[in-house]
Length: 307
Image 1 (cartoon, rainbow, N blue to C red):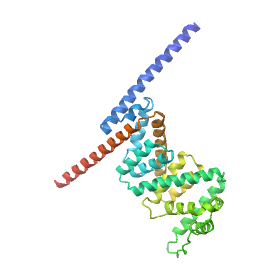
Image 2: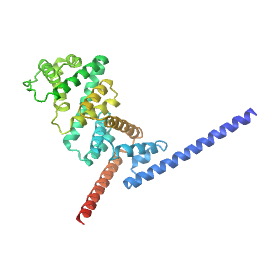
Image 3: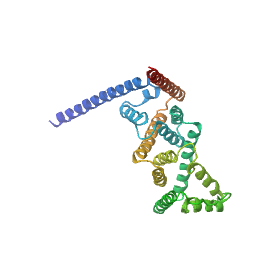
């Protein structure tokens, strides 16, 4: 009797597994059919994706990255993807997100700044973690910086202080104190010989209100990069700085989700050793198809307005 029950259990397990496998293949086929409908062809890298992962991966990509109705605009999402890709690093994703960012209107300056923000974030993540910075103290210092900025914003007519020329570590500390209203401990501890350059890069790119990218976009790139390093210090800082620049909870969540999606795709593409030259051809074809669709849509609207 026990043998019969054991045999039955094994049989049911095999049948259940076979049914699940068939369902997985069917769902994957439906997802790839939707890819065909959306793009006009199925890229080679999509064909390489595991059947079991394909439906969910495509649904997430379509509803987040490709969706024009999200809280974040397409350009910002692609620049976030590029920032994350740049410091993984993932050659596939760098190619894709660069082209998709351009497709969404990103300029060379914006692309450069997105990559620059990824580099700055990785730079400070390395230092903060490597020196085992006290997290509670760091949180308190970030709160102080945010409060200082809010006070300055509440008094826009205040006479600006005389600019300080940064030439060395000591002058950098003076400029930090004047710019931020206080000097975080990690900047005090940074090597004196390197502080001037590190501070200037942070101030002139990340903190500069006159860059090609807005402060909010820069901080969201920084947050996305931080989220998947991962770096708790940088997550704390970029989240608060993004909010300070007007980012909503929805925008913050989407930035982190774009980081997750980019890392997911990067892992698949690299782990499956997708052919790089064919991948680039597929991306070129996707971009060309999207541009043609944009032109057709514009022409259709113009024709309708002319009637």
